[in-house]
Length: 400
Image (cartoon, rainbow, N blue to C red; front, top):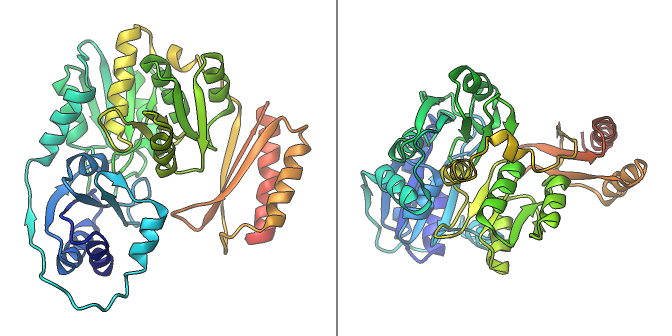
């Protein structure tokens, strides 16, 4: 991590860096190593402590870094970099990696200092730009025992919502553990029991959110994005290959152009910038709204969703039900190698054709784990499950 910090500082020309982290036990030691490396490469470093990823992106005056493994379990950790508020492109990351073993003589070191009050600044900024009065709305917040534990409740209280909070007792090892956007079971139990209007779940670093309706039924990123697209009146939305075919059908009916990218919020962001759009997202809960913002923000998405409910005067279940959903079956297959041979893609295509071509399959290596992710989509759940099983067998034979 120290070498990576030094490489980033040299790549950026000694840009000042705001560093945040989530609540993992490994965070403080990795934060310290990263700061040491950044300073040795000539960057002045501001340590913001526990901060959501979008807070760092919004508040960093020059560059930013977040020590986090996002939605992954507590045993993982890593770092996300921002330059001018924007996530790095692939070429930038490769250039930084090329400097990891740079033996150049160091110049003047930077200064490392701690900065207080950034959570409050972030909450105030988000509420001013994206908030609306939420009095009369009861929301359960699941903070995933992660970076949103302070910011999310403060923002919803500031806007007048009645809130209940779970997943707000981080201990260094319980981030994303049975809670948050990666596991809606807790929220699904609590919301009906509390008589709440909806529940909002964040992931560990706060750049994603999913929801449940008043009955505890899950509402995924595709449905949330559909609600926001119709409420905000946009004419273009960027999504990934994972997005449900029902989303495409609804947007076509409403005259909204859809741009499809590779999986990953950075690719959605690149498409929006290229097309001049402001709204995009992923089924997993990344929602990007670029009207005075620069990255995916779970808190902003949650506030926009609640604003849509308030403005339209309808419950979440009704709004989510406007989007038809094609059955999807997903599976993660542990593998020795994540390199997908052309022969595998050809066999996957043949498997799709065997269900009359009325469906699709996506097979891709995980960017964070030693697994290959499979998505199968068809007209019926039975066909989707059969397709997923066939592809799983192919992947295990080739790569398992």
